[in-house]
Length: 128
Image 1 (spheres, rainbow, N blue to C red):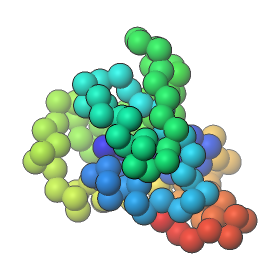
Image 2: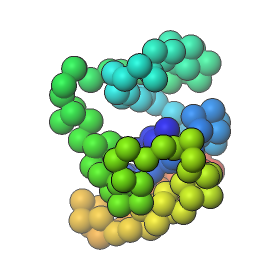
Image 3: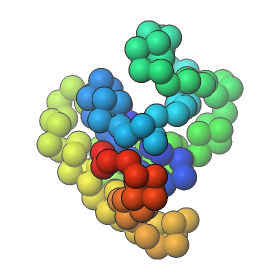
């Protein structure tokens, strides 16, 4: 599972329960999910975590532009069709860390990791 914070471009990728339990309160707001069959239990997730879950319109990937772009970047590490049951946590963490340390034009050539640190400092929250 991947989560991308839209304004910071910060990527989390791991098993969902591990991912959301590590999020600071400043990042616990809303999620926009795909309409795939893997999301059928979204209501239980929302009830358990307090997240507001939204779904984009069918066949409208532009409504999730940041996530679609990040998925493209992840394909540099894991080509389309990769069996993620065979991808270890360490391998996923390596890709995540490389992408979070990659400068982005949209962030003024700062990295998502730098932007997250700045936002957490400003909000008084603790790190992910």
